Amino acid sequence: MAHPRNTPERFWSKVGVKTSDECWEYTGHRDSKGYGIAKFMDICKKAHRLAWEFTFGLIPKDDSYHGICVLHKCDNPSCCNPNHLFLGTIQDNIKDMDQKQRRSKTNIPPVAFGENNNKSKLTASQVFEIRNRPITRGIYSAISREFNISKTSAQHIIKGKTWKHILPELPFV
Image (tube, rainbow, N blue to C red; front, side):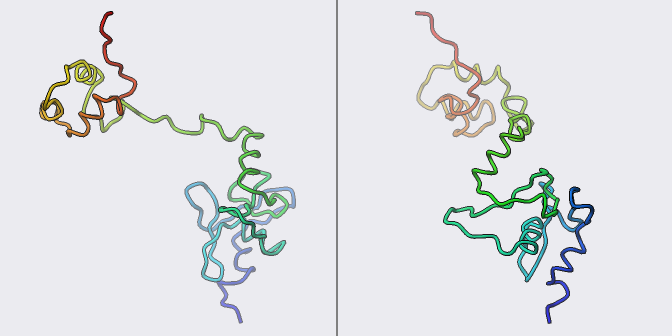
């Protein structure tokens, strides 16, 4: 006899089953993106994938690295309603996101760079000053001591690998 935790009934007891056109929210553990995480036969899986397998059978395998995805028509990551699920590839998922305009840069929080980064040790004016110094022997060590940064940071600033938005002053020709 199967352990009580390893049954489809146990899984479905953690799903808020409603009418066939409504989302059925997984009420168990969720990951940071809102996907339900369920343990079945001692393997943790996304809840919507288990819902698919319990309803339609095993998810077919393919030769791609990521395999076949179980996608949501409703775009609700915790939904386990089999009527809201369909199979597809990573490319299908990306196409679906684009069609529904869910894959935009507005969903990505802006990255704080330069002096707006709370870990920054320098201001834009200091970087501008560093960039406009003549390159001499020992310049990285001198700058690292003066501004309390590493020699590598000094080198990256001078070579333009970091603080790319601060341009050096160009000489007049």
